[in-house]
Image (cartoon, rainbow, N blue to C red; front, side, top):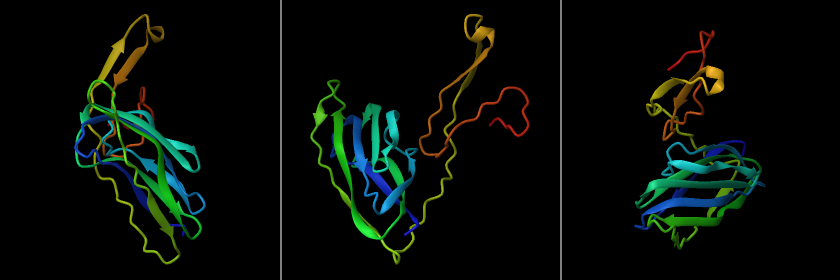
Length: 182
């Protein structure tokens, strides 16, 4: 009660090469609430709909992995939940769709395994792992065009958060106190 725990949403491809997945996670909000959602170490490389709360009891997600993923299992995302009142509830998935990496978008038959979660005043506290991974390196290009943004400079970059847990990158223009570019 009032402590946090981690729920891992995992995809087991059972040997299939897959390149798309979507669905809804349903949470028992009478006993837990969502404190955070982390997708940094996901097998999904491009989120069409990054895992996010649709309502207090539903997390929606949709993503693709160009080139596909084949493995025994891979992490989709992690939900940090906070215990509310004591009780036992189900964490379930709905409207799950997985597509085969076959160029046709063939739907892979899926089996969803629901999980039981228990909240208790006497349960051992589960430590949340600390993220120590640095963000992936990326290239920055500075462009300028008289036809774009009134001729001002344009900073172009693509950065992915594949394990570092970085919430955002901050870009500063000029010398601003407290702003460090790294």
